[in-house]
Length: 576
Image (tube, rainbow, N blue to C red; front, side, top):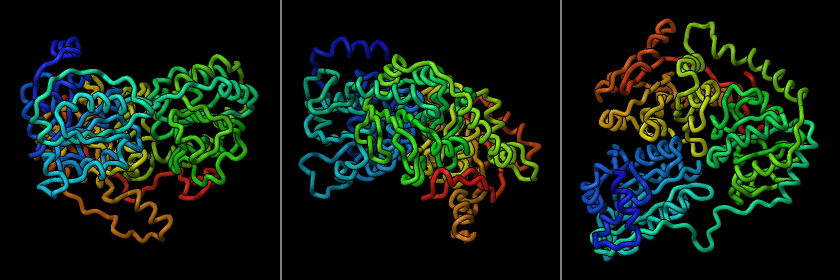
């Protein structure tokens, strides 16, 4: 692959006659793409035919559903920092991408999705497997386009990669008609470096940066929030330098998990609905709130009319559309997080906030007593999600990649998994897509094969995309699958218990035999029902050289606390 990639790059300004389908492959190679997730079909067959000659240079992963392709590409992108690439055919193949595109859009994952389309003379005729994928995907892509001429393919792909990875990353879609794939062109490839009227990064306003530094220097109770923008900007060390220099306690959003080491002395935990007690309460006590690379979504803020009203807000965010969208900023810094925090590090003075930081720890002790001890060291017979996650995390020494689905297990894992390295948390944060974890874990393992990848999934979410077990078996990706089975749609049941008078309306599940399902896909599996067997089961999973599925039966009606009820203030966070 390396030789061919270099050849393409070196000859980028030379021309070669080839088909549009081959131009797709050559363009991907020019962008250093080595992995594609996809599913073939009629309208994309010319591209797959061209790919046949390049399969030693591009690893094509044959998923079992196009939604799985997008989530796998997301997992790949999140751990590797590269652009994830998907192929799908027209009609249902293309529409099956939509959930993944929406997920990638809200979570800022860079994807390039290439769909086949019916021949251009059939557009608008309701031909077999014709769908207006541009119209359907417009709201869930950063950019999309349709290509009807072979000669336009290299330029469209170059533009797609530039848009996907620049500024606030996101998914793009290129729809290529079948006649464009068959057509001939003189191929040359020029990477895209700018697009007129598209400004992915604004220049940092230094006067604003000075205002922000003055606020931080005069603050008595500063508090810094770490979002995924810190990871995307590779600003982890710069943020650490800032909080250590100015002695600022910090907390992370769900998407900001793993940006810094979990056990850093200034890390006060996770924000939001099921985050930690202290950072939620202290949000409404701080005098300066510094938000870095985050968007103040409703799961973080609760009732915005009661959110940090006493504080001056500094909002560092690359996307100007996020400024003042939810929480008004006293000092907005529209910039790449790394650039902005680097500037602040030059302007901020060393400081100490010992009493303020100690107040976090005193509040945290309440959560330890009322919640964490029962979660991690339960005295009851049934197992808790927290103790299972803690056991796995301890055996990985903070070096593993955690991939979670959506629900109670997601919150338990996010609260109790320990991180030592950045890009170690892959989850569906904004869209909350059940079925995300299994294919995303496959993509994460292929994107970072040297690291242990553990997919923590609930029994409900697992059944939404379990067909990707076949993809995991076929690729022999050593994904460790941990199903925390409570035979319920646990989070919905929790809400029904707390807010709907225990009317468990259609949330109890009669589940299949997950071990037999896994074994049917030729993936070894084990079921643990008693605490005394948990350690042995986790060891078997982690010591397995290939993929492995471990099902653990946990308490049926456990709840995840703390919890900020919907519509309540973060100050109203409940411990029980």
